[in-house]
Image 1 (cartoon, rainbow, N blue to C red):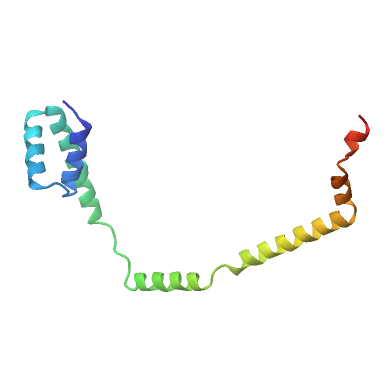
Image 2 (image 1 turned 60 degrees about the vertical axis):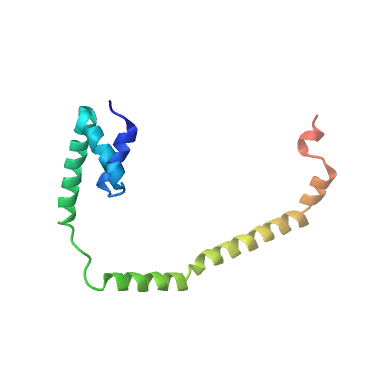
Length: 121
């Protein structure tokens, strides 16, 4: 009988996360359950393929980590100031627009509670 519990256990076995008692329990289950055994064999095949592929991955060149860490430190030290300038400009623009609107009588119309639509009703 296929069970998600055993599928998870098989995965944990490949990751060396099971204690000896859990390994023995899983092996006993696999001996009696052909569905789980087939799942184990499929997962074992994929695991073997991944290990083989990992052997062919090129390692980063010498000094990569040092260059990466120095660039990261530079970026953290030089945070993007242009964002703050843009936000400041947006704030100033908003205040200027609001001031011009208030000076032109916009506040008087809002405070009076009237609108052009109310006058036609």
